[in-house]
Image 1 (cartoon, helix red, strand yellow):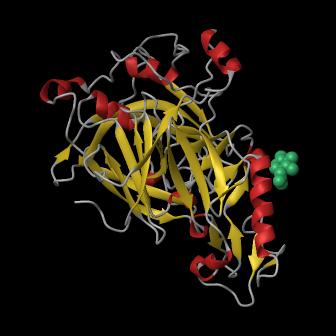
Image 2 (cartoon, helix red, strand yellow):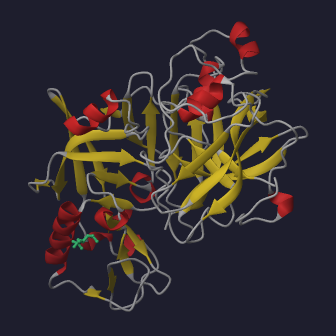
Amino acid sequence: MNLRLSLPLILVLIIVPQSIQGSGLKTFLNTLSPKSPYSFVFPLSGNVFPLGYYSVSLQIGNPPKDFTFDVDTGSDLTWVQCDAPCSGCTVRTELQYKPKSNTVPCSDPICSALHWPKKPECQNPKDQCDYEIEYADQGSSIGALVVDQFSLKLLDGSSFVPRLAFGCGYDQHFLSAHPPPATVGVLGLGKGKISILTQLVSAGLTRNVLGHCLSSKGGGFLFFGDNVIPSTGVSWTTLVSPGFDSRWERLFTMLGFPTKSNHYTTGPAELLYNGKPTGLSGLKLIFDSGSTYTYFNSKTYQAIVNLIGNDLKGKPLKDVKEDKTLAICWKGATPLKSVLEAKNLFKTLTINFKNGRTNSQLQIPPESYLIVSKTGNVCLGILNGSEVGLHDSNVIGDISMQGTMVIYDNEKQQLGWVSADCDKLPK
Ligand SMILES: *[C@@H]1O[C@H](CO)[C@@H](O)[C@H](O)[C@H]1NC(C)=O
């Protein structure tokens, strides 16, 4: 069960001044306008269940070699399991990235971007730039920044080969099957300067906008840039600074402690069930493609479980404790093949964002919060966030973003969504 949300207090990859750009990227700056019209589209593989993640294949190096990444909007750093050699790697040596004297020196601005607001710890400016990242599911990766060429295809089929900095991870610790078995690293798409998108934007290659469309049938697509966003029908809400209601956090920030994270946080929002108010409001929601399921804080979670439980009274679904797929599963008269067979017994959840005088609503229909287990039971894909250490924030995971184009617009600081056919790659 992925919850690939980086922990803000442990590793810190935050806002750095506009003037800082990765070395090796500047050649592009002169040739392209700052408001670049380019968009990149990448096909995705994977699903919510049974795999639990969506992944993208990227080509790195010369000659280019394929690497499959877990797509994660909950963290910033892109890293790949690396034959440096490696301890704790989950893939065979042949599938790992081989560094070839291409580590980023500690004195490079991109290293400061990685470590900001702390300073990189290095004895010698020529030392390699080390990183360490921890995730909410207790996995971690240690390694060094390297720079190499990425082969990126544009919508029109032409391609670019920018040199980008990413992590070469040679010391991994993962409790469960993380990173997911078929992936060799994490594509960090958070807002931090170290993210691949931020580097592409600094190089003038694309707009600071990304999005994904996760298909409920599996697969879908990821995009950088704003060309594929429909001109009508998109609902928007403001992206907020995570500490917007916390005076302590502001104080810590003033004192220079690293507290801000680069998560895509929205809210405050209220929760509706079957179109009616639940009394639950003031919710902060992080949109995180690195999380398989959706997490609510204990109080909200309990309320949702009660509402659903009450609705199921007298219906042909009974609690089944033997099914350990997720915390709560129900058994029907006969085993189910698809969520669609049970969706009529459940109601839609709605997240209502108040944006000044207007509202925007994100609908979470039953098929976006339920899965069918291997034994044909239906299980609740909404989990207790307090159990995984999320006390204040809630996380909208892959399950609730299926069949929807989700847009993270870092230029206008807003998050958008529109229902979409994620099986069709945009042209
Ligand atoms: C959620 O998890 C917390 C922490 O483990 C626990 O104290 C609480 O009772 C749980 N809430 C529900 C509704 O299960």
